[in-house]
Image 1 (cartoon, rainbow, N blue to C red):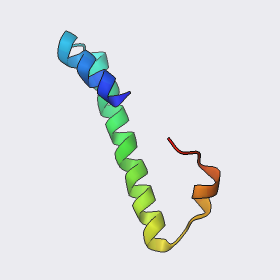
Image 2 (spheres, rainbow, N blue to C red):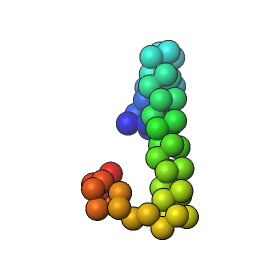
Image 3 (tube, helix red, strand yellow):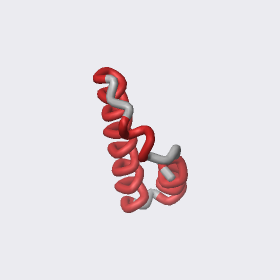
Image 4 (tube, rainbow, N blue to C red):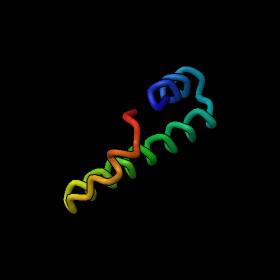
Length: 53
């Protein structure tokens, strides 16, 4: 979704597409930070509940 919104923004200049891209980027960064924190603490309980993306 992030790649699509960026390509759409690049082609059209749509502000909405750019805002969607930024939101998807922030979500992926926060998920990566949570995964890193989970690995550092050894908490694997989320892995069993969360399906792969």
